[in-house]
Image 1 (tube, one colour):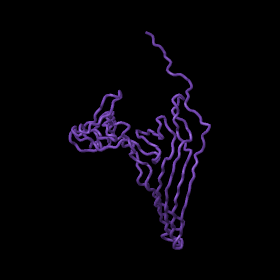
Image 2 (cartoon, rainbow, N blue to C red):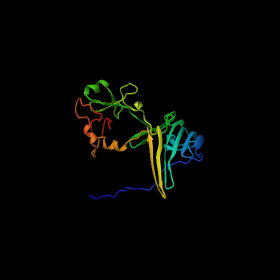
Image 3 (cartoon, one colour):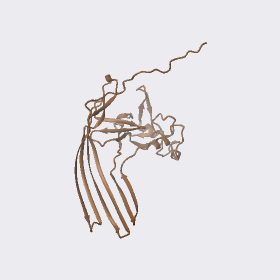
Image 4 (cartoon, rainbow, N blue to C red):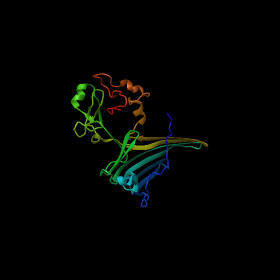
Length: 284
C-alpha cells in the first residue's frame, strides 16, 4: 500500500460581477414648509416643519436572466415617497446672571411608500432579503423593509386540537405530509387549504416608527454646562435575533429561563412550543 498525494486546491478565475455603464445617482425631489416663532421675550421657541419627498432611480439589485450566470447586478429601478412632519419647542426656564436652564422636546412622524420597483424573475415587483432567519420585504404599496412571515395563534395544547385544525406542510419530496401536533405552533392558514407554505406568509411587522424625537435639557452655571439628551422611537417593530437563538429550543446551546414554560404534556396551556432538536416542524 502506498499513499497517494491528491491535489486539494487549484487556482482559477470566476465570473462574480457585471458592470452597468448606465447606472446613475438616485434623485430626490423634496418640498418643505415650516413655521417658527419666539414668544415671551425669546423665552419660548416653537417650530413646525412639513416635508414631502420623492426619490427616483433607486439603487436596487435587479434580477438577471439565468443565462448570464449571475443572480443580480446593481441598477436604477424604483421609486420611494416620504411624507411627514416634526415639531419642537424649547423653553428658557432660568435666564439669570450665573444660572441658565433650557429644556425642550421634539416629536416627528413619517410615512414612506414604495411606488415602483423592477420586475423579478417571478414577475413580481418586490424584493425579499433573508437576514439572520428573518425575511425582509420591499414591495410596491408598502413601507420599505417590512418583516414578512407567518402569523400564529399560540401553541396546540392537545392532540385533539391539532387534529381538528388538520394543518401540515409537505416534505422535501413534495408529497409526504407532516402534520402539526400537540406542542407545535398553530400557524395561521391564510388561504384555508390546510397546507402551511409560503402562500401563508404575510406582513407581520414594520421597522418604521410611528413617532420619534428627543427630550433635552441644558443647565449652565457660570462657565460650566451640563447637557442631557434622550432620544426615543415608538411603534417600530424589531426582530430579536438573540431571542430566536436563546429561546428556540432546537440546538445544544444554553437557553434562557423562558424555556421552562415550553410545552411538555397534553393539555398544557403555554405560548412556548415544545423543544425538538433541529426543529423539524419550524416551531422556533
